[in-house]
Structures are given as C-alpha cells and as structure tokens.
Image (cartoon, rainbow, N blue to C red; front, side, top):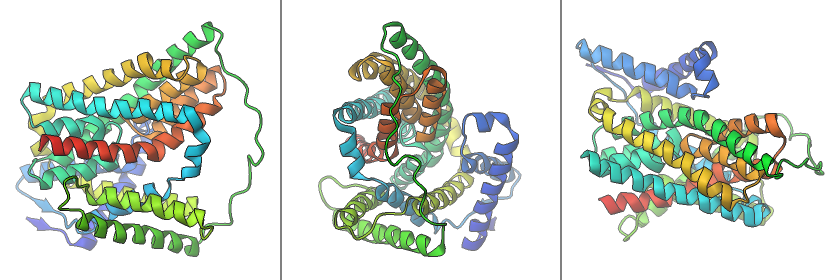
Length: 395
C-alpha cells in the first residue's frame, strides 16, 4: 500500500487539474458539453487507482484538506448572493423560483420512489435526485461525503457519476426543449423583443487583480467558515439540523448583505470567482481521484434508470409547467432552456443553452436576468434545505 502525504495528495490534485485541462482542450466532446476539468482528470485518476488496486498496488490519499476546500467553495456561494438582485427580479423571479423549487422536490420524490422500487438504499435516490442533478459536482461531493459518513458505501462516487451524466444531459436536452418552445411562441406572435440599452452597461471593471484583493476575500471566506462551523456545532442537537457547509453558505449570505447594507464593503466579484474556482477545483480533484469505483459498480443499473427518469422529469416539467407559468412567450421558452441546464447540470450549461436559442431567434433580457440569479445561488440555498428534509425523512 502507498500512503500519500497531504502535500503529495495536493500535488496529485493539481496534476489532475492539469491533465483535465489538456484533455478538455484536445477532445471535442468534453469541450462541447463543458465537462469540468476536475471531472475529466479526476475520473481518469480514479480509473488508474482502480487498475493499480486490481494489480495489487493500493494507493491511499491524505484528504485532510478536502473538507476545508469544500467549506470554502460554499462560503463563496453565500458571499455571491446579492439580495438586491432578487428585488430586481420582481414577480417573474418569484414565479420562476417556485417552478425551480418544485422540480427540486419532484426530483427527490422520483429518486427515492425509484430507489425503493429497484431495491436500493433510498439515499441513492436523493443523491441521483436534486443533490447531483440541480446541485452538480460540488453539492454531490459534499452530500456524498455526508452519506458515506452515515454508512452508505460509495455515496460520493454515486453522486459524482450522476452529476457528470446530468451535466451532459442538461446540454443535450435544454437546446431542443427551448427551440421547440421558442418556435411555438413565435408562431403565436409572442416572439422576442429588442432590449433597450441600459445605463451603466459596459462599465469598466475595477482595477487589476492583486494580492490585496484576494486577501480580503480569503478573510471573508474564512470568517464564513469559522462562524458557520460554530453554528453547525451549536445546532447539532436540534430537531432539524443542517450539514456544516449549509451553515457556512448561510453565514456568507448574511455577511455579504450586511456589509453592503452598512456600506462597509462590497464583495469583490473577481477575487470571489477566483477563490471559488480554486477551492472547488481542488476539492473535486481530491474527491474524484479518491473514488472507490469498485463500490459504485453494483449500483450502475439502478443509477442509469433514476437518471433517465430525472431527465424526462425536467424536460416534461419545463415544457408543461414552467413555460405556461412564465407566460407562454419567447422569454418563457428561453427560461425553460436555462432551467433544463441548471436543473440537470450547472449554471454555465444553462447560459450556453440560452445563448444557443437567442443566437438563433433573438434576445431575451428577462431570461438572462433571472437564470443567473436563480441558478447561481437561490437554487443552492433552497436545495440545501430540501435535501436536508429528505435525508432526515429517509433516515
């Protein structure tokens, strides 16, 4: 057995990201469906570890840094939640968010129901439900670790595999669904409307990126982690408890908006994005390269069935419910393309889906306002609460 030190594990994680970047640049399929570089490199590393294990060489990584990297990522989500943007969305934002939240609940109901029908642990249904579908790789790895600690073998691998398939499906389904609905809206005379230019568009970004800007952001992230961890420990014995990373996310939301309301500090979006990318990339690389693929193999069949049902659910719900609730017009069609993207994959997939529709039919300012707000942070907050409720219900 080879036991990697913490430094060696970090080096391997960085190498996984480098390999992932090279593979994504050279393989068109990976670039087309925006497969994250940590996923590409991490899955390759997991396969190599599996082959070595089958050959009698076992590798174990020291993942002591992994939990803190996870918490740092969720802190950046909270710190990115600007509640002033929510106010800008108005009634349309509320309606769209309700549609999105309804899908989160349905994804877990479908997942748990099929898990029972297929004779597997109900928590597998949650992992292949809104954890992986709407939550993506970051949420999948986080909840996978929670369920593994609670005794579900291979939970992290299940969640990350489901998130990868969901990411691909979100890109495959969103475009056709949005295009069909857009053509229906245009045929009824509810096509795109040109957007009037707004004051302030094209404003120059703040000065160049610097160490000082990054240090302030690291301070805010660290405060969110420290306070969130204390609150999680304090609330551990309450009737309804939440994982540490959910508390950290909530603290980040409060910290960002209180500082802004008091006019003490505005969160630096560039430094925040940088911190989010580094923490999530290293976290995912460590999570994926440490996957025990041999523990996931037995659940491959049930997992495929559940994921297929999730794809059908999102496609049908957006077409039958979201499109009508949001007005049945062109903007609603573009919103549906976006919901397919982040309901099965991630916000970048949603934006890519919408861009494909608007490049063909015309602009949709409302969709490009609402989807980033809901897909970037509102869905994560709602999803954390919903997943916690389902996890507690299934024991």
